[in-house]
Amino acid sequence: MTEADPDVLVVTGADGPVLCDYINDRSRVCVIRGPLGSGKTDASCQRVFTQMCEMPVQASDKKARKSRWFAVRNTYPDLTGTTIKDWLALFGDVGKMNMGNPPTWSCDFALEDDTLVQAELVFLALDRPDDVRKLRGAQATGFWLNEMKELDKANVDMADLRHGRYPGKGSTVELYWHGMIGDTNSPDDSHWLYKLAEETKPEGWRFLTQPGGVKKGADGKWVANPKAENLNNLPGGSEYYLRGCQGKSDDWIKVNLGNEYGHVSDGKPVYAGQWSDEIHISKYPLAAIKGRPLLVGFDWGLTPACIVGQLMPSGQLRLLREIIADRAGVRPFIKQVVIPFLKAEFPGHKIKSIEGWGDPSGVAQDNSEDSAFSIAIDLGLEQLDPAPTNDPDIRQDAVRYFLTERLDNGQPAMLVDPRMTTVIRGFRGGYRFRRLQVSGEARFTERPEKNSYSHPHDAVQYLCVGVRNQAPPAPTDDRPGTSGHIPMSSTAGY
Image 1 (tube, helix red, strand yellow):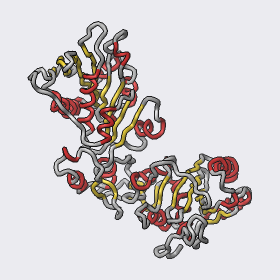
Image 2 (cartoon, helix red, strand yellow):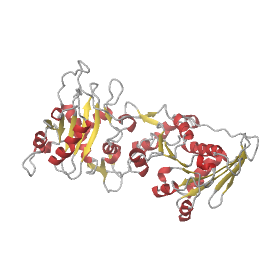
Image 3 (cartoon, one colour):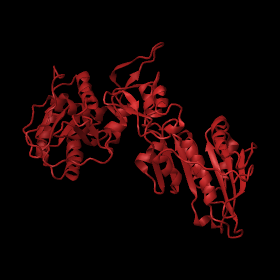
Image 4 (cartoon, one colour):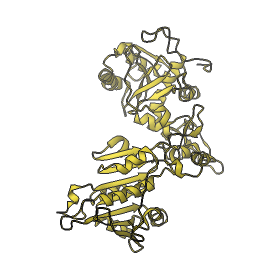
């Protein structure tokens, strides 16, 4: 019941299974990532209020359910213009708002069991030095980190040490939840939040991902995603997202409406408009299929890379693992890194039966008067050949073929293991054409920028161009009468 009207009952809900999961979750830290308009902020508001009502009664006062929350935003204008307004739109009538320093909402109302919810929500912006100091001294039950990707990691770390301190030692709060919740749009794939969610995965943290409002269709164009959440609360439903695509760049749509991680840079992604996290990243780690040859692609040099894949009977090229080294010669890279890795990860495949292609420049002799290919063959990779071309345009087109082609069963012609983090970041935009510093319309280099993503992506290209150029293999036992050959109708000049 509200303070303004004791006969008013506040009822809220969430439009979507991920939103419901987020509201009901009680992990120590839970973060929901979703597109614009997906209902994340309202869900955070609902969760905070629900947990206020769930607090256990105090040992000293059998009727009081006490808690103190902090709602944190990166700037004061964002805090007052969005976070506070969103909260008051849902629960303004339930308590009282004091726009002091800091702004604080408080409530004292009775539940049906005659217990009293005595809670406060303190709003903090972390763009002012005094607000950061207030965070250091916070005595909180929980933190709500609104638009979490905009926050500094150091402040999030500090908040994680300040919850569980209210109502205080000896209270029954120790028997109940305390922690942090956060809502955010997709960050850049070099962002600290990405690294926590996809790499570190700290104990006690849970990361929830909503479906995008749009997704890539079979023709590579953005279409409405029927699994999108909160559509019933958006003007026009799914049309809200389709209208939002108009006049926007592909990268902007991917991050803000498609809810995919994006790479922030001044460059132009080599595979802009062709790569999609949702389509091309496998939902689970990929295992090598017995009876199918392992395929490898090599890029030589002081930062060598090897990509391991398999061609399925359906024609799908699966990229299974990436092997990357820094400042290693060909012989130590293959002998000390690649061969041990292949033996450990793919014990059912003999090294001498592995097929593959490498940078054709590797036919030249190095300082030891051995070529990269002769070294590889000497070490056991007997079926490694120079790629049929070193033309970068043809190599990139081979990759584009696999990214854009759809098989008869509707599956993509390329599927990437989620453990291939460097290759995936490259597809997202790390592998890019560098922007030229000229006035007027944006212009970019003709060749991709040399960086940490270019070497593994060169290896991907050698693998793809080799697969497209190979002769049809003999039928396999697992699917008699079929082959893994990819049509060569558009590969003239290979």
